Image 1 (cartoon, one colour):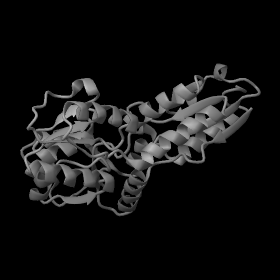
Image 2 (cartoon, rainbow, N blue to C red):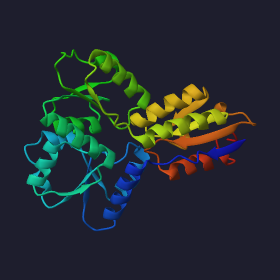
Image 3 (cartoon, one colour):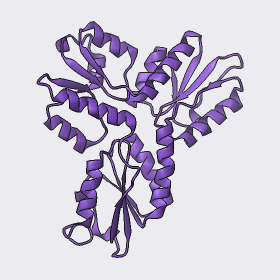
Image 4 (cartoon, rainbow, N blue to C red):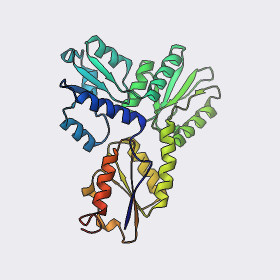
Length: 290
């Protein structure tokens, strides 16, 4: 049985930058608090917490009157970004921010704020409750309409000014479906494709990789939206695709002796986890041989 790792796999640039910042700040003796999980990956979070990272529930801070208890302490903003309201609360409480907001997400923030000031109704294509979407919505005073599909588009009057943007990790095909439906309803709507070009390219690479092997092991967090999308892509390209978080989830019945097993991951899966799965699958104690 041949085992190969997807050469294009690994965290996206935004996640890589965030992880690098966390690692650098954990080298100092000061405590680092993260607003929510830095990455939707339980194993990686356990590793970082083992190095001293403290995780705060973002909703808890959002619902508090102040963040004064963290005055003078370092608080890490993950790549999803946060709302301007939450940022103001933290700054006013004299919290020292370590900002790892993805540059692509920041551009969406600026775009939404600009059009909102001009009186536009903001529509966000994405997952309601996702931290990135919640942060974007904050830039239009939380007055955005959030839609997961074209059927959720709101009623629009002919003279309404409308801007459609996207959660950056949304599949571009889904965004185009929503934008086409919006333009049918309102031809003057402003549509800005803010889906991430890296993620879009990754979807194409994943489809080709899944089709090139006998079996796919997609390694990624079960709570990761990005991983769920990639697993759907893998499954469509190769029915023998399996979503796992760790080697102990592998079932020997998935494999045949002459299989070519491909191991890949989502934008929130570090390479060390792919190597761990590959080593386990290839070893005498691994999935096929145990």
